View 1 (cartoon, helix red, strand yellow):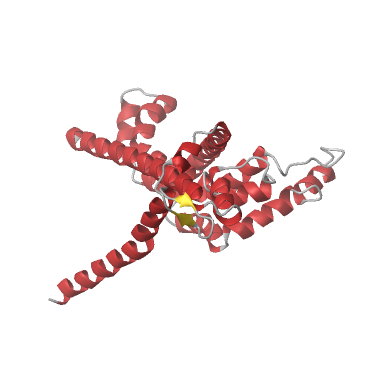
View 2: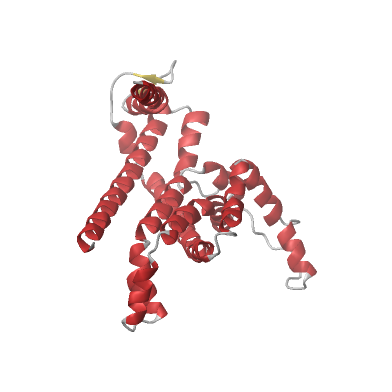
Length: 285
């Protein structure tokens, strides 16, 4: 009886939390996107789709394309760096794995905005990177690293890399060594084993890590503002400026709804892929 009561209250509290702080705010955003900008209020009647039509303007289409491009590059770098790192952690002795995972999680203890300020200090003209390169005699004068797409990508990779490493580690750590032994017995080399055995079996971790990096990267407006100088805006910058500066809530809400739907589509595709993989594994088993 106590267990049933606990389940009832636990599920009820979680459901209430999701209703109040997730569903209702999203419904308010959706409703705002269908209204007009008011002269005396944030939103007003009549209902209209003009905010969604403005998203097809070439200016905003270019911002969306830049957001996707920078996010894809940051995701690819995180994958290229995170996969071997996660593989090394998974192959360490159980004695050292907790320490390495702890070091991966430690950056989460500091606010990402503060870490972005640290990157500004690192990449500044008088920053640590230029000082180190000049001290080693590799450059003669300071290089301008900040306020470029490269700096934005560096910031995104630095902040989001743990989100790639953790799901990859989880997938690699569960990898059954018998598959590797079977591939070796059949004469497959290390490269063929990696391509045909390791990669397919760790694909759920790869997809999960890519989603966890790609989706937040499109909305991290403060990284673009601080490291890119606000010259090249991301979708998050458009939403922030429309709501906080221009106070055009319908248009900012419409952009938020489109991004949310895009994220939902990616999550649905991941769920379908994971379900297909699980079904294939059940048939193979």
